[in-house]
Image 1 (tube, rainbow, N blue to C red):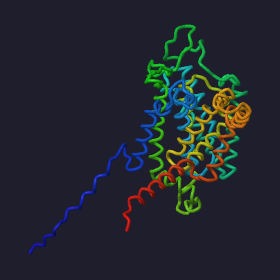
Image 2 (image 1 turned 120 degrees about the vertical axis):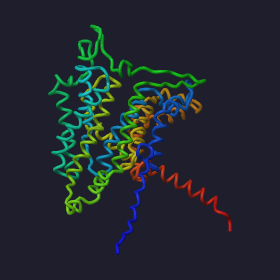
Image 3 (image 1 turned 180 degrees about the vertical axis):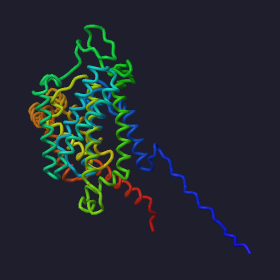
Image 4 (image 1 turned 90 degrees about the vertical axis):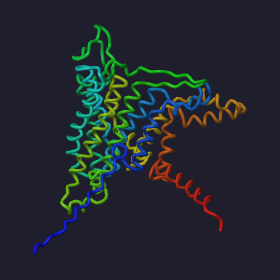
Length: 411
């Protein structure tokens, strides 16, 4: 008698879902929203017709749009460190400056094509971040923050007065008519310009629709492409096991030590990645405007990215981008409003009242725009600790409650 064993075939595992570039649900939707915003930015940021009184608030010109996406990259990278691990760096501008200088020397020595310069900026900034992070992460809390600030100020001092042959000192570094990059042919006596395989960064196409004027700039869309890639990678980092470890660093390092994991290692990797993001932003700044000075390393630049992350929502995906956009908008739009513009706005009032209103409003605009930023930042910190993202979530939740209430049938 022969025993026969019935074998049941093993169930095949269900194939993994493949969404948009591996993203599912809200993450895929968020990436599509950011993609739409950057592609249609020339339309979105120019809501008012040219020549109208409200055209003062249009932000659809190339220089400002480039700043939106470049500083968005800077803030995204900073958020990977601060938002996930809780380590607050006051010296991230050092990596922005190092990346800028690296990209500039790439253009001066090798090629005016922006791609090698940008990648060179990322690599050099990452190496510098590894060195700074290895030393600074020996301490935590406020001591870590002070160490990063010290490194940034030392970098600023070196670029300003010590390493002047490499940095140009106070006047900065730029492409000169004596530069002859190895892989670029420039007519003698002419100043080379940054390009993408021959296409100039300043190349623009203007489209007029009625009283509206929309500008499509090549440099902006190149920077926007890098921003989309950087944003996508940040989503993957946030959702990865590595991102989970970084959150564990923020929540309870002692518990991580008990499990045999080393928090410092994960934090150092986050610090390096964050520094590389800053280097990318610095390289793009040089690609758009081929000059760099030591002021990019000053402590105020580091403080600015901290405000961007907190204002938008530290630890969120899109928050730092919103914070960067809000600050750069106020810096470039509010700072241009002077007393002449204010007199035009309040011209309908009696002369005495007009002058009073102009003097009061002038406190918040022009060179005093930082006062407005301070008020906004204070209000956000007090009433919206989660930043602009939390504000948007509250508004969305309120509309959903109203909609559900209106759809509930009366008993």
